[in-house]
Structures are given as structure tokens and as C-alpha cells.
Image (cartoon, rainbow over the protein chains, first blue to last red):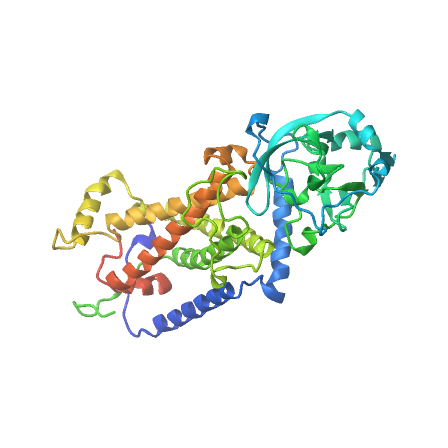
Length: 249
Length: 227
């Protein structure tokens, strides 16, 4: 029997302790309900702390929970969802004036900068899979994606040892994403030029988009124009507004 | 808060560890639920795009502004993913305390409690006049407190299944996939809410002295303080 199980006695004297504690509890409850009442993002005092804590979660996601070899579950093409919503930042579907002149620029901290046409990319190793797409909003949908693994690009551009991140940039109103190298090197992380057995449609990022079942949709840059290797953590369109930077699932 | 049998001495009822984890859980869970309702607004149904959707009376519901924390999806996610740490920490500290102190014996509902639970239910349904004798908690309380801890564990596990459906794919599959895990995660909210309402009502109706005990640790009420 431990000490705490032995009833100890204390004479009842005054309920003032109780009243004080009750007031404290009331104040705490009041604060909590005010917090909820305002649709509060934490305000000037707490929001920065929440964002700092989000970096801790990024670290846990990247260093503890992310596996560079674990593959996401794949589905059969027959299990594809009837629809997959498409999002872009521009007011209308971003389109190239002259698709033939489009190139993917691979640049930054690399030994060999590259300028790749769609034909160049299609000649590289091809990966196809049918996976579940997870949106940060909570919806999901199954689709097939066809493209070249980012690791095949990395093999050809040979990043410097000091490069730790890739910044993926688009021609959609300045949309971009920053990625850690390990997630980019995952075997299911690809530059997709095809979707559901067809060329990538304009609504989903034609001519080329980043795809990976290890990340939430907002990390999967559409309308790609460049990937830049860097040693400083690049921000991103949504990430800079407060969405988790790692976005890994 | 008077007591028919006159003043009794205060007895120590709740260890500080129990009181702290209890009130931390109250505040943190309120934050988890309110930020969760804001997150729910991002996609207020359950099922892959293109359907079919799981049956949900709250399909498409936008909860009132006062009930949502975070302002928008990103703000709510940051609250949710920050508060999950103190929630899990409090749960583990509480469990550790119960195990180390042996207090779990007063709380864990076991098969031998079934008979007592039926007697308690009979009392509440007015099929029985006298309150059955009990220790620190009656068997129905044990059932409630054991279930609510299990519910907390379920909320955390379904949460992890939604948080990392690729890395923790086995866990997500265990709950029937990403959308089903979201679904169960959402329902834990309403069980928590129903439990909390019942819990608070019973505290005030049956044993108001237990509120003081959960704040100060000292109890002077009608029930035994220990088994």
C-alpha cells in the first residue's frame, strides 16, 4: 500500500481555499471560452509560438516518422475516384503561351545545371502508380500518375554535398514549395507528366507537376518551371501563410 | 454542499498528479475540439471524392463561429498539432501515475464489476431503493472512467492515422482507411462532449464535494475516499 492510498486527515476549517480555487478555475474556463469565441489564431502573442511549434512537428515528421523506403499503398486503376478537384492560385487555369518552348530548369547548388524539355523527361526512367491523394482540407481521391522520379533528376544534376533542400517553382502566380531532400528522393516522388493514362491536364498542372503520396496536396507543385537546390530552407505559397512546412503524411 | 451527517474531516482523495492532468486535459481537450471543428469545416463529409460517403448527420455542417478555434484551416491545424502534445503527455502521465500508485484498481472496470454495475443501474432506474455500497468509485463510474480513457486513446490513435496515413499506413488501415479514420476521430468528439456533460451534471447532482476534491485534493462528502 502506498502513501497516497492511506487516508490522511486534515481538519475542516474554512472553505476559503475552495472558493479561491473555484475562482481560478472559473477564470481559466473563461479564458478558454474567449479563446474559442474569437476564432482565434493565437494573436500576436501565441501565433508565433504555434508556428515555432509547427517546426518541431516538421522535425518529428521528417526525422522520426518519415521513412525513405516505405512505399505508400497503391491501388488498381479500377479503383480511381470519379473526380479529383483541381486548385490553382491564378484566376483562370494557368496555361503556357507556347508549350513547345517550355523547359524545366534544374539549377542552384548542383554540379550540372539542366534544361529539360518534356521529351527529355519522357526519355528518363518512367514510374507509374495509382495512389490516394490526401488534401489538407480532409478530402481524398485515388488517381494514377505517370512521370520521372525526382531521384533520376538528382542523379543527373549531382547536387553539391551542402544542398539540403529543393525549391520547386511554378508559373502559377508565383506558387512554389520547399522540400527536404529525403522526401524528394523517395522512390514515389515524381515529376508527373501524365495522369490517369493521359497527358497531365491543364487543370492539374500541365505540362509538369510534382507528385508524391508522401505529402499533402499543397506540397505538390503544379505548372513546374524550375527546381533549385539550396542549403537554406525555402518557404512556399501556403507554408509562408502558416501551413505546416513539412506537409508529410 | 452540506452533508446530512454533519461535518466530517477532510480526507485526501486526489493526488496532485491526478488533479493537474485532469484540468490540463479539460483545457487542452477544449482546444482540440474547437480547433477540430474548424478543421472539419475544410471538408465536412467522410468518403473519397466522388462518394459514397459515410452516414453523417453533421454532413456539411458549419459549426458556429464561437465554437471554432484557429480562425482558418492553417491556424486550426497549428493549434491542433501543438495541443496534441500536452494531451498525450497528460494521458501518459496519468496512466503512469495510476500504474505506479496502484490507483488503477479503483478505476479499471473488470468482469467482477458487472454485478455491481447492474445493482447501480437498478438504483438509478429506481428499481432499488438503497444506494449500493461502494468504494471510491461505484462500478458504473469505473465503467465510465475506464471507457473515457479508452476513448482518449482511440482519439489519439485515429488522429495519428489521419496525421500520417502513409507512414503509419498500417494504423490507418486498422481503422478502415483514411476517411474511416477521420470518421471515428470525429465521433470521439461527440462521445467526449456527451461524457463531459453527464460528468459535470452528476458531479453537481450526486457529489458536489468531489469538485472541491478535484481542485484541492481534499474531500468531505458522502462517499468513501478510498477502496
